[in-house]
Length: 487
Ligand code: ZN
Ligand code: MN
Image 1 (tube, protein in one colour):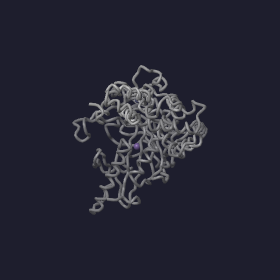
Image 2 (tube, rainbow, N blue to C red):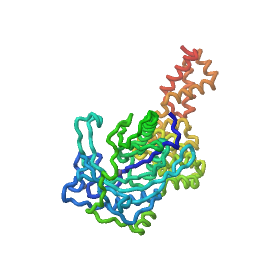
Image 3 (cartoon, rainbow, N blue to C red):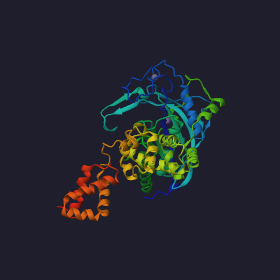
Image 4 (cartoon, rainbow, N blue to C red):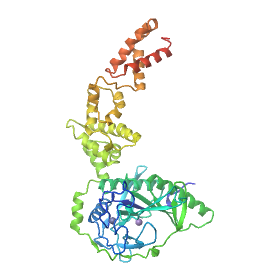
């Protein structure tokens, strides 16, 4: 079934936990709950006990302002929180404190946009709004949600600050949705309001419909890849239903990793009986407050791409790759700025080593760069040793693992006693070269196998003594045997 992009309509609601806030949205409980025992970061407010009164966390307003500015939203100067009423075990008060943009209510900020790149053409994804709300408690199931014999509730998550970004229904394919999420994640990373690598920091509700038909909402998807898969599944399902002459139900569905299953027919907004939260004063956001945050707002990813190209003469491709992880881009700039002799060639070399070899190693070993002992100066040292001819590129590549442990190439070269080139494939390549270049010694080997020592010596010479002699001998014997030079 082919998806003509025009007939698929997707809108996303992205909940992001402001994980870099130290405390919850309406109380001073620690929001660092992930390694804590269940129900230890709780107080009467976030447990929803009668008589407790919420107090707004000022820092959460600051963080929301940062995101609103980064997304080019228009911040509302005054708003009330609203109660969104529904009954569920994860919501002890019977309502969630949220924001509402009707009935006199306002979102935190309206509009905004995120630019995405799909097949090298750009598209602006318009946002409807962003708003603040509290996270409900966390439900823990044994095994799958459908077969679990019981549900446990952990209120540590109750009251954590969420910021919800709501797009207009303008996404027209699962791939666009995924790219949008990638960009949003990047912007959040750059604003410093959340570390989205933490489990559960990001949850997506996807609204999806085929033009002219009601929409279904798939709730609580927790990874970008899953969002894409769920959307692909849902498009196919809805098109099938329509083809069979059935009407799509407006309903909420659950993605179980393979299929979407109906949870409940969609609640309508009126079911939530939204009304203003009387326990909190209206929030007023002054222009000076916004201006001050604007002054300190870090550079955003799109700005950085342009600057990196200009400042380090990198290609657009390289610059776009570098900024995909803020820490990698920071590492890059830290590194290249350490050596005043660096010019365009070194900027490019540094970028190549970082993006091809270091990031490759990080991915393979499932680590982040700050979880290793690699320092920006290690790559400078590596480049300079290659330049001086102290080490070949080929050998340097085999030493990346050691470098990640904090060993510099210079130290490894000095450290003569240590065997360093033990990678058999590399020794084999050198051995083959030596065999090709030394037909006379090969002839000697036919008569006297002891002549193999001369060949091993040549390999050691070529590698400046870095090859492991034992492994070299083993490989040389195998090669010569295969050539029927020795028995
Ligand atoms: Zn609390
Ligand atoms: Mn929400």
